[in-house]
Image (cartoon, rainbow over all chains, first blue to last red; front, side):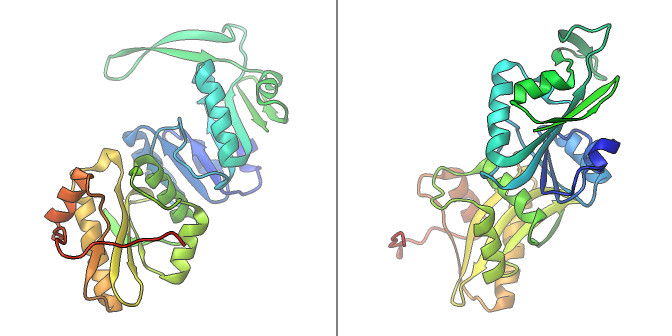
Length: 158
Length: 138
């Protein structure tokens, strides 16, 4: 959270913002999108200074170069290879800078897992989930810098 | 849902995303931040947004060129259709156009876009059987 709040203010697109938990710490002109209307409702109540809209992330329904920064928290690690490559090219198209926050590698987890998750409504979902070191992320992004590498989270900028 | 004039910057970014999610294939001009900011400069108040708090749920251009009113780019978030947001945007646009002196308004609708034709007919804009458009790119 401190790492995100320390980023210079920028026109930022927060992709898959969820309930806006991380969105609220970003500075600058913030636009959040998520495919879930109910997530967006919560985020919009939490961060009145931003703008929110319900939309899919692939492809990003956003004009070329219309943001300074794309931010995404705990989304990148759920993308399977083909989506991951597509997301990176979409992020590059939309903004010059990409900041990714995701889950750090942990001793009791494999770097790539399929996890079963049970939602509040009782439905079960298979979820693709990856764990990262800063270096792994930078490799995939083709360079950049590690902003934070703690026991739980990594944040990189590229 | 509150309808108000869009402001430069954040509102424009969000409107572009909304249009990106629902762009008709009949739209002929590019949607860019520069184009929308220019609209706000030349005709402040022409771009109306429907907001639920800080969530954008709809938008329309109700432009006045000094002679007539023109509606463009009406859009409602896919998850928020069939709630009357589009109709409310048109009514707010009419109010705005009347206030700046327009007495007649037009909506551009593709002949084969049946849902849009049905919508505009239902909100009081029947298809004009007498006058059509002659157009050129500049």
